[in-house]
Amino acid sequence: MLKSYDKFVKLTIQELSETSVDFSRIKKKVSKLLQLPIPSNADLREIYNKLVLQKQIKPNKKIEEVLIGKKNRTYSGVAVIAVLTKPFSCPGKCLYCPSENKMPKSYLKNEPAVMRAISVNFNPYAQVQKRLRSLELNGHKTDKIELIVMGGTFSYLPKNYQKQFIKECFRATNDYPKIKQITEKNEHGSIIALEKEQKKNENANRRIIGLTLETRPDYINEKEILNFRTLGCTRVELGVQSIFDDILQKNNRGHAISETISATKLLKDCGFKISYHIMPGLLGSTIEKDFQMFQMLFSSPDFQPDLLKIYPTVVLKDSELYSIWKKGKYIPLDNEQFREFILRVKEKIIPPFVRISRLVRDVPAESIIAGPTISNLRQLIENESKCQCIRCREVKDAWQIKEKIILDRIDYSASFGQEIFLQLVSKDKKKLFALLRLRIAKNNNQNNPIRSLKNTAIIREVHTYGKLSQLNKKSVFSPQHIGMGKKMIAEAEKIAKQEFGLKKIAVISGIGVRNYYRKLGYRLKDSYMIKNI
View 1 (spheres, one colour):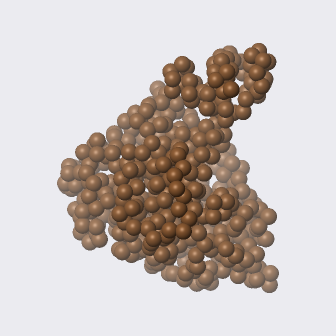
View 2 (cartoon, rainbow, N blue to C red):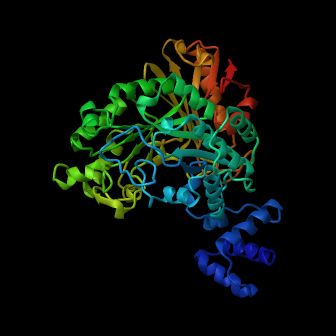
View 3 (cartoon, rainbow, N blue to C red):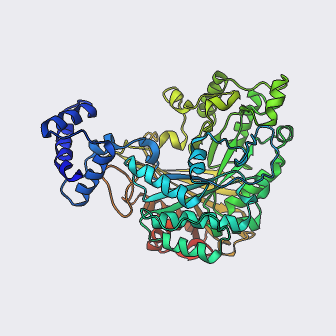
């Protein structure tokens, strides 16, 4: 049936190049000309991809654009896959966290990611495969995967479950699009089984190029660092919430700010990218105190996170905060207050080496009893904000092959070390094409728990933005795979050697990117890619 639509696709491409009429009208016109029923966009995508693969037609930006659903899903150059661990008890007693029955702590059953997890009984293999299929049906490439594991304090989960969960995520990507046996009850993961799937993933058609785990600052120590690296973790999301001890105590957070400072340093010295979860509007805080908090995050070298998720405090029914609010002892921010606050923070505080990943949590408005309910705040303030954060400057689909690109460098102190942020940007620095984070730790990392990182500079991140391109393939529609990463890595090696006198450099590489670094002379040691310079 679909074969008869080859001509439909070819004629549609011709019409797209010759008219500015909207796509639905073009489909109707072509359907009438060929006397065929109007196909779905998913069917058209399947035919288009086949014709390109068979070299019957050339890649066409216009039809790719109109056929993609939810285009921003892969504009950062990766396909983000979020999975949820099954419900476990939580070490925290935070006032604001809901405790919904049979749900991971702080999550609600009507959140989109949670609903996907529930539909497959929290099985990691099924979650990954289902999400990959959904993205591909919407026209997205899934060659490069950024895996984000949600569900609360990952470090608190049984170690066997951790290994089994991550192993199944790797196995799901290795098997896709085939579906092999889905294990339901085996939670006794082994290092050998995990390493086997990781090794396969180095050459798989769909590779996990980054793995993010969530945890609390008080759970980060040298032992946990080694555990995270065994799992393949490259980024850690820390539930910081506030950097004031009095606010943390009033909200029963269960850790002090000293533990956030210690965790941040240890993670950075071992090369991890760090994302802070921050919550304006907590019990006992004020708008001005929250603003001061954001100022301190980027003026004090104790913090300096690489990414931020900003979650306004909301009142949810299954939380202790609900009772306090009901008694009139807590007044949350409203929509306008939060909107104005975020605009002020984005314009006056956020530096260009930080990415604001999220501005609100994906909590449905009907579950929020009190507090901000804006779910699309980023879109609402897009034209008002002059934010210079990474996400606001990512090139997305605005790539122009002839655009003048310059290499820019920003140095800053962080956690008793020197951070060097390299970025490839347009001349006015408003478009960001690629970035690299290089760290030179205090005393050349002599006290690092990972022996191979001593006397070594470490690259914590290399990322080329723009529309996701297939592995090992260039695309005229994207700045990926044209040498931007290599250029910045060569510059980082030069800085480490000439400015700091170091003879080794390491990369905290995702499993699926190891072969890329091997081509540049790096070799695997202690889960890092290391090179003598």
